[in-house]
Image (cartoon, rainbow, N blue to C red; front, side):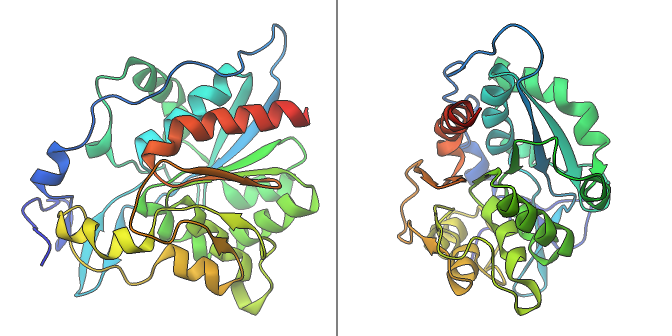
Length: 280
């Protein structure tokens, strides 16, 4: 059984990662500065981030994992995008504030702290995703799906997310997703429809890690009810990393850019800015 020595006092039966697991969390990142500094002049483009507003992920046995958006996976790619001249809007399903796994925040990383503070008003007061859809996505260059197990809540079952995915493909926009963020791509197959990313290659956090080492280490308080890679494969996507190794891998298949974990955040930010610059 996973160690459950770190209950979340805000909700009955909810748990943070174990104390031992949290002690292994890095306090800095490998962010190494902008890959494509912004040119002088107006903003180069806009990014739509779809963040989770959900805190608690159901775990088998009737318990909950206290989660949200992973700060490294959310913020390090944004550092690259911001430096390259892109402005980012934040949306959640209902317009409620974006939730973060603050226990994973790299507090000794000045650059990450800085962009979090700059973006905090948008995280606390995001747009409602349906309102963004009603206005249209014409003003955006890319959609970004940050990681954290919280991305498995709500987003994969959202028809609004499904509609975003369809419009991304209709307009050949860039899609960026990291770690558990690809869970939102599952919405593309809602109601038995064909996922607009069927046939695409993607990397994500490996199911075998979630089902084994993440439980054994106490990061997760138990077995999840479903797994991201398995769900994507069932909808015709090709998940490239199906082993039990987290390597920081990134990958591009056409307009879909993906990374496997927090270790991939810096490389994914670089890949995203390079690809967006090539499309400009």
